[in-house]
Amino acid sequence: MRKAAGRISFSSIGKRLLRAIDRMRGKKYVHVLHIGKTGGTAIKDALKPHRRTGRYVIRLHSHNVSLRDVPEGEYVVFFLRDPISRFISGFFSRQRQGMPRRFCPWSVDENIAFQEFATPNKLAVALSSGDEEEKARAMKAIQCVEHVKTSYWDWFENESYYLSRLSDIFFIGFQENLSADFELLKSALGLPRSVSLPSDDIRAHKIPAGLDRTLEEKAVENLKRWYARDYDFIRLCRDTIKETNPSFLVRCRRDK
Image (cartoon, rainbow, N blue to C red; front, side):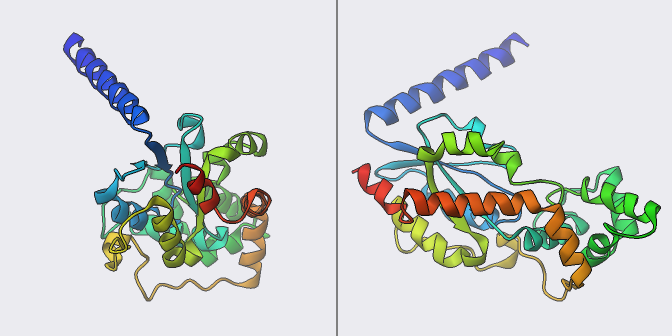
């Protein structure tokens, strides 16, 4: 145990030393948060070979790293997506247990959920079912399936905390404009024009073609109510972008 603790301590000291050297050289840390099903896998795949630039050190994080985990004064990048679209993507991702890119087996509750609800539409419609037992099963399912159960606020806590860190927000992108927004991010980070998102669907972790993504009107209504707070967060982000200047490049120019 003492040896393990020693290795951890040595690693920690090494990281602190490297960070201190980076600061002396004027490098800024940029943390890429990975909010599930918003294009994060493709973005990290593209950025991985370019994590150190002339001006920035890019840190690529897993799903469990939130804004609170990023030191104050260091930059943050994240992407968002319409919550209903994210729900559909998350549902199918977990239904196939992350395959073919990786295999992440179901939890016991996820197994039950997918036995009960074969499509996103069936789960969403059941949220307002007149059958109280079916409704209860749907409520449990949407709260246990990975990606589907998470809220944007899981990464940002609340409006007050998000606003307190506004000066650290380097870039906010949207999955619906992933290619164009990635080009803007690339420019802001000073990355080579040759850097690109993966074109391979497996590397990008995209939903396979041919799946039934259709939602009935009732399903859409239910999901809008369920993810109302996520829609609030998107509006907050768009509003604060406008208030602070829609061009994040202004902040980057200040670093020069």
